[in-house]
Amino acid sequence: MRKPEFIYVTYIETTPEKLWEALTSSDFTKRYWWDTSVVSDWKVGSPFSLVLNGKTTDVGEILEAERPRRLSYTFHHILSEAAKNERPSRVTFVLEQHGKLVKLTLTHEDFAEDSVVIDGISKGWPAIMSSLKSMLESGEALVIPLDALFIDELEEVYRS
Amino acid sequence: MNISKFKPAIVYTVYIASTPEKIWQALTMAEFSRKYFFGNAVEIDLKVGGAYVVRQPDGSVHISGEVVECDPPRKLIVTFNVNWPALIEKLGPTLVTYEIEPAGDAVRLTMTESHDRPLDDDILSGGRTGWPAILSSLKSLLETGAPLVIKMAPPQQMLEALKKLGIKTP
Image (cartoon, each protein chain N blue to C red):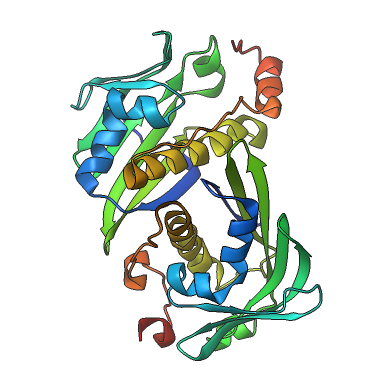
């Protein structure tokens, strides 16, 4: 059987440079990613974390950072015990100029067997990527309540 | 039509700052589809058993099917058969489901492409390539008033796989 992976492609009217900035700067992520900050110096080997409401929700390590074309990090969700015990997965963003647009390909893969995080990320990424596209194209991110995503196990930190 | 044998092969979800009614119109009216669907015109008789046709800019039929379920502005299921000789005999029919649900101030649109038999990745690469472009452009059209200009040809791996099966493509 094919290994589980999540792939999401979207086309955005922007530049690779602006999209890179939106993926790596908390000034932007806080607008389109439920007030989440991205913390890293974006150098290969450096730590990476997502912080929401003062709590670190995910940690990882930068694997590739080729501005403004390719960004990859390991992704370890640490809020629940079950997720914490799972080995990290891997997230990769590929930014490609496509005419006057940018094609953004997000691949989330290398999940542990019977992963408990795959449900949440599969429902979360389309909302995050949609809101990112709206912010870059119209100036306004989307307001999507997390409860509307129907994630099986949604930890308390996301609800506050 | 009995659709219980169909299994999802491709799912694409996008959140749009719009209303369910406007998304429904965009999916079912030629004046909208021409803008975001590579110039193609959607013509649909909105009742179960009604015809579903997608015409290319030159007027030729690109996709033909029929309405399987119609619940405006929430759910639309159509058969979605690309009009290439021998395609339906070799690969079976394609089913497309659109689900439209409010999600806060936004609306979630979920497209599911289903088939009644397993198809290999080379064949599915067509939908995997096309749907993100079509639905990204639909989102931009509804949010900014301007669709995206996305130049795209069918993936080579799909064309080669179809050729091997004896399916002629333009």
